[in-house]
Image (cartoon, rainbow, N blue to C red; front, side, top):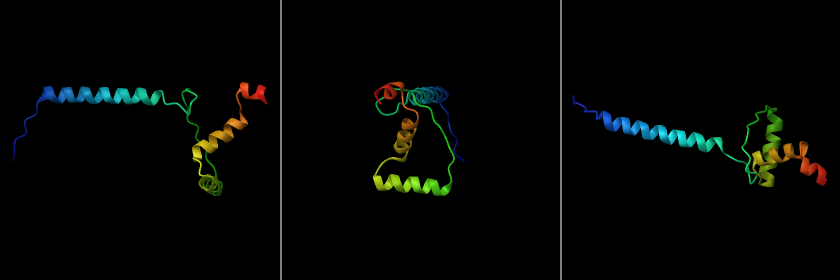
Length: 88
C-alpha cells in the first residue's frame, strides 16, 4: 500500500482559500438584484394546481417569455408602487 504524505500547511492554505471563495459567493448572493431596480430581492413560494401550472407554462412558452418575469409582472400590476398609482 502506498504511503500518502499530507502537507498540512498547504492543506490549511487551500481550506482558507476555499472559505474565502465561499464567503465571496455568499456576499454576491446577498446582493442579487432584479432587473434594473437595483433593489435586493426576496423569494415568494406559492403552490398552484397542476393544471394551472401547465396553463401558465404553456402561455409563457407561446409568448416566449420567462415564467418568473410573467408572474412578477402580474404581481406588480396587483400591487403597484405609489409612483405607478399616482401616474395612473
